Length: 492
Image 1 (cartoon, helix red, strand yellow):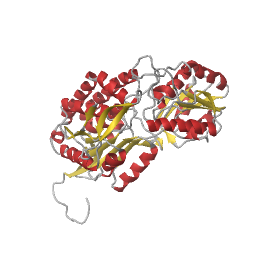
Image 2 (cartoon, helix red, strand yellow; image 1 turned 135 degrees about the horizontal axis):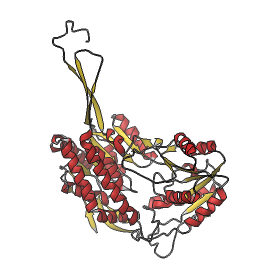
Image 3 (cartoon, one colour; image 1 turned 180 degrees about the horizontal axis):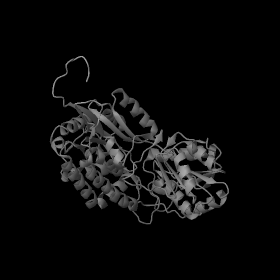
Image 4 (tube, helix red, strand yellow; image 1 turned 30 degrees about the vertical axis):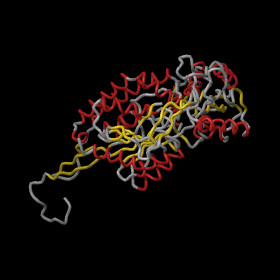
């Protein structure tokens, strides 16, 4: 069994605790690696290394030089894509076919921010004061604590670290204890790419130990977190005590809205992908299907027919469509929501329980499940499940669809399916979500800002907007007067 140490200051180091955590292959249900159980002392060591890096070689480099290193990191990701993909599959059970495609996008994140590194510009402001020259400078916010979730560790690492490093910050990464190995393997690649020691550090372990220590550390200036809204709210409260900047990508309960004039074949494929892709373990999962009542029965039959063809199995196999639930706690959570939906009166028309059979050896498979007779006040329609469970709700009018779509505490994503361009624009503007897809779903780009409204988060990741999350703006006024003021007590 391979053993992975902490990565601090460019070195693999033992945890202060001397303790280790097993990482479990969710498909096989067996341990395949050990990761270090980092604690408060380890978090402090990592922050100190990051702080030192921001006063050394990294700070002395030009933005162009930093960008060249980021580009080399992107190259390293591509060169090692197959190996990284297989490691992440063993870590969290995602499909190997999906991970191979995702690794290509991850490299593009690094290339994109490599190009942006020396495009960070200040301004000359024509202020009203005579004999003055006013400037703005953009400066790195400081040491960043990046806390990532288990469902897409390498993608979240790129989304957070690439813009942070392009801005000139140094980062301490805390991956989920359930999926840390791919992040550690990636960190080793950054050293080979020429990233100075201490600019990127990885502290593994429990969120209540290593994660909490990073959030509370006085030398951490910025927190970037991906996870649940409940945990995010706690982090936000702690960060506020020391005025730390925060970016948070939290939960979702996204509506996928299908109107009766839509291309129903395309919409059905989009709905299936939006909820059963990655076994529903996506913050942006389209877990609420809002379908116009005039087509509800026919569209539901179409969905059932497609969903019945889904192949569960080994995520390493190209024949598999849906893999296992990533962790035992998440598996139990999904089972609990199935029971809750039934007790609340929702009618299960497909699936509804654990999946068993040949090839499903790890015991963490859930049948693709569809509930109908769902009302929007049910827990299954209001709370994030993070599993392959679709709730179907009907509507009559466009306004009803908007009202139901917005009647949740979340606002991360939404889908709109219609042939009417006016309706597409109206509904996209009216839905309170950070991302709205029209006649598609799960279409992502490193160039487009993403993030949540309401309890789905704060700030934005990806695109040019993301780099601003890691920069402070400083104003400078230079006097160009030929002589000193006559009266020192009156401002000029």
